[in-house]
Length: 287
Image 1 (cartoon, rainbow, N blue to C red):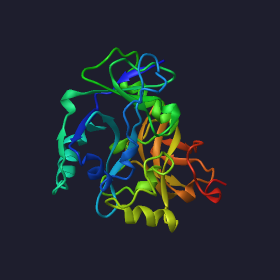
Image 2 (image 1 turned 135 degrees about the vertical axis):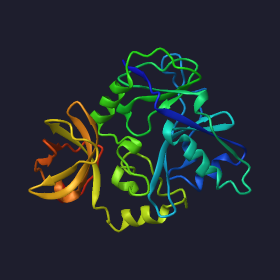
Image 3 (image 1 turned 90 degrees about the horizontal axis):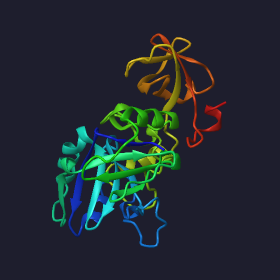
Image 4 (image 1 turned 180 degrees about the vertical axis):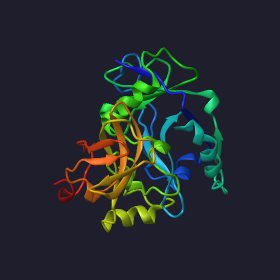
């Protein structure tokens, strides 16, 4: 029942009476869904869980910039994000404060982020919630310092690759990736009902006009693991590129027409797309 401390994660704290409405107009998902534990909630181990929201910040042009889990704790919202993006994310959000009664800061030094899966009990005294993307992804927990762990970040990486989950900047490209290419609709990372947010127009147009041409897809790797950015070919035609991977598993950005059952070449390796049950693709693309 693994628990891993994830030192590559950081934290952005948003406080103030307008915090929910402020973020609501900026990020892709419904911020009101982030709630603290209810006293009536069934505890997991000795810990009651809140509800987290998976969301992204887009550019005004609708391209992906950063992703995070939003957790509620008292009078603040905590954004569990990549440590390397925390300062940038805090700075970008703060630019939009205007007259909103909010404060935004990089609080990475005050938190240790953990992931648990496979039925692991949530450590007591943490700010915790189920991973909102998939039940199999387990839970996220925030603590002032690392708690006892019996798994490594590499173990978590293997688990998320086995589930086919993209991992931020390792799989998405800032200012280039379109939100739905990364499966945000399937992984509960975008709300179609909450109202306007920055970059919404391109996201909605991609969905409702059927403009999606590529997807981030889990692949089985046979041969040496290709470096990120290595081009992928089908019958001599370029159809995508490799992103993250380890131990015979990976994520690749692929054109939809390449998902027809063919094996693909990438560097010295062969890739076989494996479409997980959570990923919705048009039937004609999976034939």
